[in-house]
Picture (cartoon, rainbow, N blue to C red):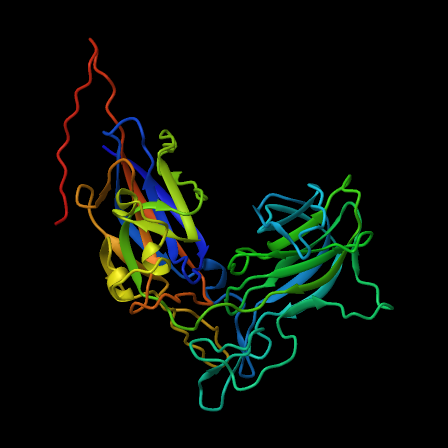
Length: 413
C-alpha cells in the first residue's frame, strides 16, 4: 500500500513571466525505483475570507481592515531583502530584519494607523459591484474612472524637515496585521527606511502577497533588534494592488525544474510515515523548465523570454497534460445578508491510485497559469491549492541479500 501525503499551497498568486502556482517534484538521485503519483489537485478560495465579517450594511460591502502596530519582537517568516538606493551605502546590520507573514510578533500599544483595504467598495444603484481598492482597480473589471492621490499609502512622510519621521530604535519594529476579514486581494508591499545617522536609504519590496490567514496575524514586519547600532527612520509604507482583473486558465504540465528552492513541506496522512526528502514542493510564484528543457540545455521559461520563434499559445503547450478554466469565486451580495463566495473548491485533476500522474526520479508536475496564450497572468486574487501525492518507496532488501522489486502500474495515454 502506498504512503499518502498532502501538500497545501496557501495564498498563491502569480506574476508576469513567473507563472508557476504550485508544483511537486521527485528529487530522488540514487534509487530509480522511488516513484510518486499525483492523484488529486484542488483549487480553493482561501478560508480566511469565505464570507467572514464581510457584511453588507446599508449597501456597503465590508472591507478587510489592516492595522499598523509598533512591535517589541518579531521572528520567523519569509525574509525580504533590503535594496540600497545608493550602491555605495553600507549594508544594513544583520539585526535589522524584514519578513512576510512572521510567525511570532509582540505588538506594542494601540495601532499607529488602521485602514480599510477596500475603502469605498459598494453596490451601485444598478446592483453591480463598484470597487475602489488602494490602486483603484475594480473586482472583475478595469480601472475606475478616477484616481485618488496616494491611495496606495499606508504611511508616508513628506520632505518637510520639521516633521519627524517614524523612528525605530534598537528593540523596536513595525508590523501590519489583520484586524478584520473582508473582500480579498493581493499586492506587493513596499517599505522605505533611512539610517538616521548616515542618511543611507533602503527599500524592502515583497513578492505578491494576500491577506494574512488569521485575525491578528501579520502580513509583514520590520524589526531593528538590539545590537544593530543603528536608528532607522521610516519614510513610507505602501501596499498597492497588483495584477490584472482576468482570471487565468490553468495548465497542468510536466517540468524538469522550478526556479526557487522548495518552500512547502507535505504532511503525512499517517504519522508513522516520514515525509521523504525526495518529495519537494513549491508554492508560486516561480518560473519553470518545461519537460525536455534540461535535455535541450534551455533556460527557465525560455519559451517566454528567450526569443522562441513560434506563437506564445503554442509555446505554452509544451509538456501540458491538461488545460482547464481557472476557479473564479462567484459573489452573491444581497442587502442585510452576508457577502458570500461560491465555487469554493475546484477539482483540477482526480484519479484513483494506479491511474494518476506518475513522477519518476527527476520529474515534476506543475500547475501553471496561462490565459489564451497571454504571458501576463497575474490576478489580484489569491487562491489555495492542494496536491494529494502517493509515495511508492523502494522495497527493503529481503533476507539473504539482493533486491527484488516488481509492481504493476497503470499509465495514462
